[in-house]
Amino acid sequence: MHTVLSPCGDLEMSPVNIVRTAKERGIDILGITDHNSTLHAPLIKDLAAKEGIMVLMGAEVTTKEEVHCLCFFENEQLLAEFQEYLNEHLPKIPNDSDKFGYQVVVNKDEEIIDEVDCLLISGLNQSIEEIEQKVHSLNGLFIPAHINKTMNSIISQLGFLPPDLNVDALEISLHTTKSEFLIKNKYLKNYNFIQSSDAHYIDNIGNAWTNFFMEGLSFEEVRKALRSENDRKTELEK
Amino acid sequence: MKVKDIVEKLGLEVCSGEQGLNREIEGGYTSDLLSDVMGNADENHVWVTLQTHKNIMAIASLKELAAIVLVKGYKPEADAAEQSNEEGIPILSSEEEAFELTGKLYELIKA
Figure 1 (tube, helix red, strand yellow):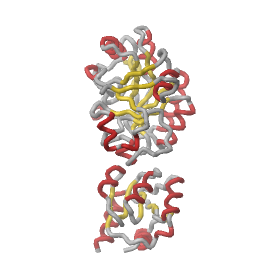
Figure 2 (cartoon, helix red, strand yellow):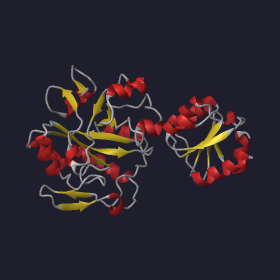
Figure 3 (cartoon, chains in turn brown, blue):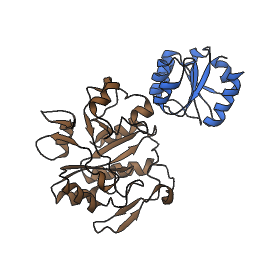
Figure 4 (cartoon, one colour):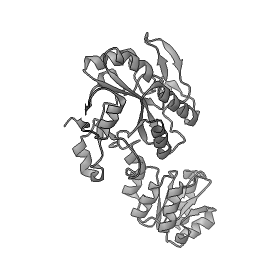
């Protein structure tokens, strides 16, 4: 999901509000993926840990081809390394907050502590393969986002999923189901799928979810479940 | 109109697929969404785009396009150029932006 840091993320999407709502709705694992920025993920991870909720820290990265991809990292150090890569490769286009929305970082007391100047919804100057390789060099997870959508999905931008692209799973949005999606995309039937809310507003948190079958809450367990290794697996709601 | 004619008249660089320069052009399509090109470009069209990913060649091959023209001086990724050479579908490059290039191509092809 997005936070208030994404220009399109609602102002109510503060770390505190997100964790409270996730707790109310019985969510065990949250993926925090602002557009091309990881800056809110560590605080949400800390707040969520107190509630027994695991946070996958990452970003929704826009590739040169304007494909959106979810990228997740195991710890703050790897996340910070990826943030450096984002800083280096995101075009320096100033954000006009009247047109696109605010890009603010807040603390646990909901005070604004930083505002990101560069427009976060631009595309990086890196190809999807370059980003995939960077993510995996940092032992991360790489998941093309909402691939059923007609904009900013790998299928809209590149026509089809390149068969040699190393993905950990594929994400579909809440507007479809896996079986409906596979009718027109049979060649993807052997991939593992996740489905998520992509929430930009508090009310949308938990509108879609994926069930993970695993031995405990850890990044490695999530990786195994995504890849269906050692009897771990993921299942989507029908 | 052949591919080599637009290369000459518009001063395009031939990046790859040189053996396809005698392909006949019957029209064109300008778009950066490969899903859209797959649905709407026709055989023997020249395709104007800024996408350089190797999937452009898969689309060009599937749709039997005459050539691809990359705008703004972009060059194909190495694997795209390789496939272009194998299939003899040229990838050309122009310094111009899609708007100007498409206008000039349209003037040439409609004649």
